[in-house]
Amino acid sequence: MVPRYSRPAIVALWQPETKYRIWFEIEAHATEKLGELGVVPKSAAQALWTWWDTGPEIDVAAIDKIEAVTRHDVIAFLTWVSEQVGDEARFMHQGMTSSDVLDTTLAVQLARSADLLLADLDALLAALKRRALEHKYTPTIGRSHGIHAEPVTFGFKLAQAYAEFARGRERLVAARAEIATCAISGAVGTFANIDPTVEEHVASAMGLTTEPISTQVIPRDRHAMFFATLGVIASSIERLATEIRHLQRTEVLEAEEYFSPGQKGSSAMPHKRNPVLSENLTGLARVVRGAVVPAMENVALWHERDISHSSVERFIGPDACITLDFALARLTGVIDKLLVYPERMQKNLDRMGGLVHSQRVLLALTQAGLSREDAYAIVQRNAMKVWESDGELSLLDLLKGDPQVTAAISPAELEEKFDLAYHLRQIDRIFERVFGT
Image (cartoon, rainbow, N blue to C red; front, side, top):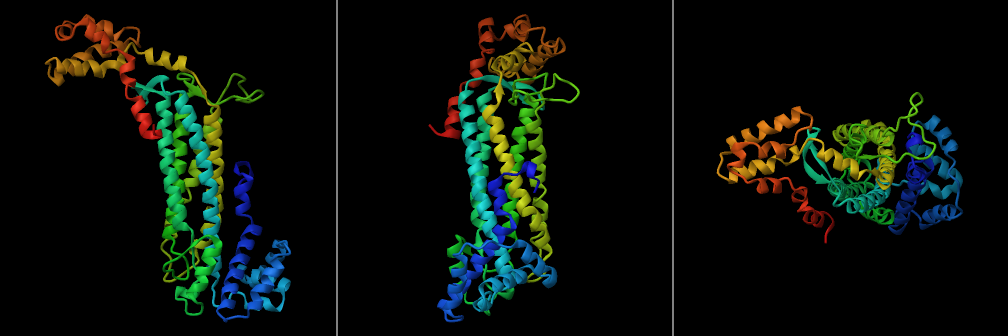
């Protein structure tokens, strides 16, 4: 976790104090149910909750000091709690194994992180929708291979991003449900020393579902799916950030990041206005995706359990969640304040002498009786003259002067094929698909 790329709410979920508080709640709820079952005295859970109700501070340094001797974090925590609570604390952890606590806690942290990420996505979706509707009919050039293709609108571009992040949100909802499972099943997961109703009680108290069948750990395919979902969302962030970076290039300059008063773009060149936020988002997306392969590799553990996954998750759990939270918030800010230049978009649309209308002429010639091959050759022959003139020539003028074209299409029909509005006639329908009526 790097403070520069972190926000307080999600960082708090991954602090040692928060982790130990979740550990305590799991242990206390389990002890509570064990008391109801008569396995331990009911007074044990009462003692734990009485101490907890005093609002004790978690002494992380003291627990670390104990762990330096025990070389076992859960035992160190239990020892410290026993020192605070007294004799009744000896009934904690009856029939449980460390992974019951660790895995259930990780599920809580990932689920709560997902809740924050879902809120982040909602904010981003709201910003994308607002800007998409604002520029629903703002014409701009669509590009394939980085080359002018056919006209679209800037709102169309943003609507694409909206639909993509809406899919990402749906995936995250599913991933959250899949990760939010509780396992209190004891060594190797057979419930030999603890009743399954304890797991059910803890799961209900912690807002989780019960793991249908575990080994000594919750199966790591669940975690792999969760981090893969974060990775896909990060890739969507990079896709939109890359689009903004391209649109801000000096030769394009159709949109750019907001440049605040007093901001500097370069230590050497005072004129620079760089897309630093979008570039930063590209880098952060790589960090989040970096968690995906280790999460996949964690699925294959030895037999009923090993701890090769443990060190990995201590990194990727907080790092991926915290970084994605920051990236989503940053992207929302970029979209919210994005500077859009419709005049420059129109200028770029007009730059290549009408080449963007070539397909309509091609189709018109085929409908007039020419073979597709002949029609393509005729239009391409004229289009290449415009291309080589760097847009100084007009495709429409050249076609009007081509006998093969005018023999099939009248000048008036040709002019109609160069109508920009034709390319935008389905925008309303597309927006209804994305945003509803």
